[in-house]
Length: 181
Image (cartoon, rainbow, N blue to C red; front, side, top):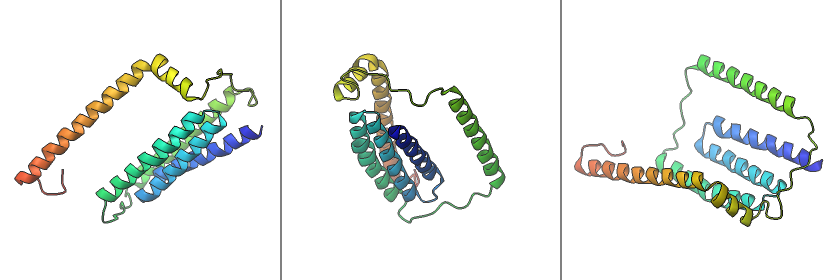
């Protein structure tokens, strides 16, 4: 029961930090909230005995991706500009009301469908949560979605390189002002 309580507390931390990512007016503060979010997810993976996923979460997302985000933020916003206050407060209020209503509906449906919170996790076998189990699931059961995802990422990378090289050529030829892609 202690693990369930810890999982609920971590869930609240993860949801709160996710809200901080969206609400924070400063991009660097959003990245710091994202670090808390990703580390909280890693601890949730540890509580669910998915050690490999927790390690991958910390190393890949909370490590490398966050460094990439911070690099992009500092590169693209050297003056530290803040976003001006949005004048459409009525739309923001309606959006918040709709979001809270949908969140309440989701919680109602979730807690209405849970009958026993103390139910044990299903036994996944000896390789559950290990690198072997992850590899088997990735390259047997989920091979096609994995390959489609890698193809989409490859196309996006090629598109970014082509777009970047065209923009650089236009800047060199004087057709685009510097800093305006």
